[in-house]
Length: 197
Image: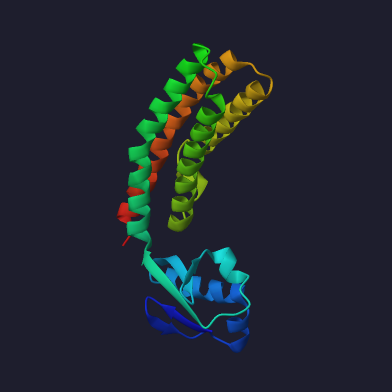
């Protein structure tokens, strides 16, 4: 398989590496990370795929990796997350109010949307932290916030399973200050990203 990174040919260090897609991916990662880049898309013979699909490939003629600067990718992602935070907080407050009014017809949909939004937000934070190589200890309050979020999410899940709708509203309101703290976490990561060369 021929490998191209941003249109330029890439030659693995050995034939063994070119046969093992996992080793090949690790070598490509090492090559581009050294330049402050990360790949954003992998296309094999015209088909776009993620890294796990690439490692399972048996055949293929050409693989193209498109990269972006880690700094610009992280800054863009974090800014998008910070813009989304007020919408998530507002949505959480509305859901709590609906539960308090016992408007139960859309409970499943509301909780699914809330969960999806929060998962996306945390995923952006964690990927950004990983790309910036920032340890949890460097982010004040992050560990405590994640512990509290998990505790409240568990409470919400248990109340939902037992049909205790009013208690869901209570826990939704408790979770809002923790979601707000994520903006501090994002702000710290943005500051670190902006200081990168």
